[in-house]
Amino acid sequence: MQIRLDDQLATETLAALIADRCGPGDCLALSGGLGAGKSTFSRAFLRHLAQDPQMEVPSPSFALVQPYETPKGTVHHYDLWRLNGPDALHELAWDEACEGIMLVEWPERAEDLLPEGALHLTFSPGNTEDSRLVELTGWPADRLTGLNP
Image 1 (cartoon, rainbow, N blue to C red):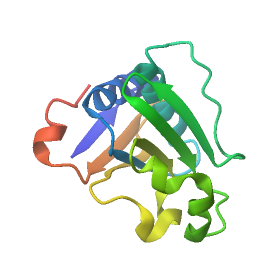
Image 2 (cartoon, one colour):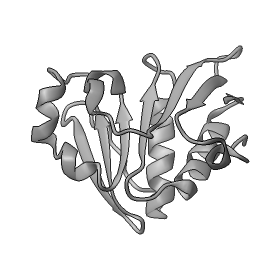
Image 3 (cartoon, helix red, strand yellow):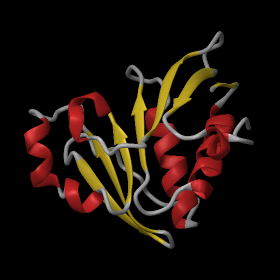
């Protein structure tokens, strides 16, 4: 499924809609180049789950992982850009994180350790500076129904 996001608000709305459908054991794999919208989506997703629109959501680029407590359980936000290889994931509470909700930026660096059934969101530039296209794959069609913001 491909969705056109006209602006940041549309990205934030999509994040909230997906957050409402997530539960323990779900993994969101966010792909796209630098500035594609992964961090904007992640911030909105985490704020919605935490029910705190002002929550500080720093990029986990340097720490590689940042855990958040939410009413739906712990969410682990990974940024694997600087990961030395998938073997390093075990030092980052990866197995524990798979039992909660996971947001994974640069998921290709996890190789075959990414959980089965992950929702893959691939962000790409739209036809204006603020717009984006996002391709969603990996979830059954019934979980994706109604996601177009």
